[in-house]
Image 1 (cartoon, helix red, strand yellow):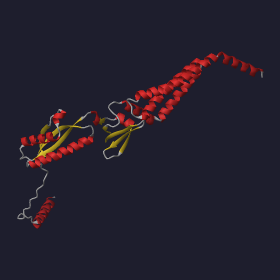
Image 2 (image 1 turned 135 degrees about the vertical axis):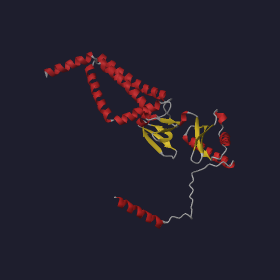
Image 3 (image 1 turned 45 degrees about the vertical axis):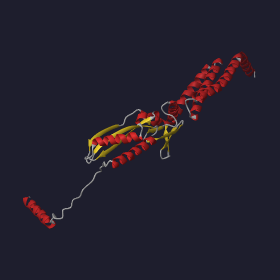
Image 4 (image 1 turned 30 degrees about the horizontal axis):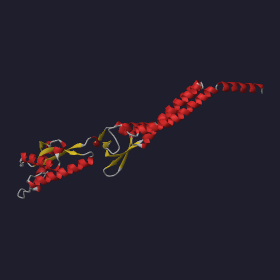
Length: 300
């Protein structure tokens, strides 16, 4: 009992000696707690102007809040002179972090990629993009996946890591888009008339002066049954659907104009010619074949 009493008295002396340090550590923890809550609100409000995804905003703000708490805990343990204990905790946390990181490598990679994508200015919700063989409107950039809504109304879920590592085409970054039409006309057509009529038709249906561009027209090759040409013009558009609609309208109007001007758009044709007076004598052919076979056998 004497040893127990001596031990308790020693602990009492240590406790009384460290009361000021305990008070300071407690104050530090309280300040860190309220600072973390304030940091959560400030970060959430600050990044809310640039990131529309609530899940990403919550993640970033919680990370900032957790860092504030950890800093406060570190300062409190330093005041209490728990340096050795702190080193042990940090070492254990480091080893545990490596193990957890290896186990959740794919998930963490997608999460980090989601945060990075959320800060990209060239990729936002509502944009029309084409990536990894898919094309559609960006509906959501979550922490783990990227959601596209295709033209057929189907949703495509793509891992964030795939989007970050793959090239993508964003149709919404520009307000102008160029359409290319390839066609061919018959060899007997007046090529100058074809060029003039095509440019006139495109200009009448798509105002190029307003966009500040000109219609481009080039004859490209002498084809098997036609002289082929390429026509390019500009439209105001921010998605691939508008591009398809404009291309369809241009084809319809060019076809109407060519029909009205009696300009033929040829297509491959095959002609079969029958000559009834030159029939083959199959029996005669059979005899000649047998004669050749006998001559070959005698030669051997």
